[in-house]
Length: 89
Image (cartoon, rainbow, N blue to C red):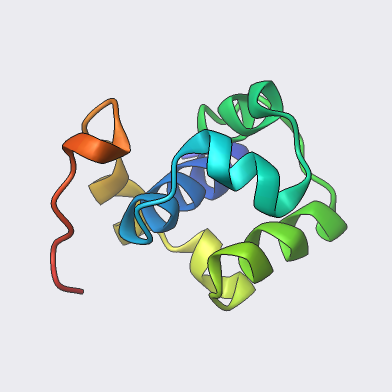
């Protein structure tokens, strides 16, 4: 798995764990919703600063955005956060 996909899937995973929509995440991070979509799909090359912004917004350590096990779980998430029931971590 490429790093961009890894970070994107982990961003999605932790956003879902916090029951935050892309719209809400956009407001928290000051990123456009289209940019968040690109991040979560692994289609954008993030700067270190933007990775810090994501981790801070999700209230996680940066290293968690690089966990392949969590990224794999994120592939099974439903399309919408309101259709998701968090799994205890």
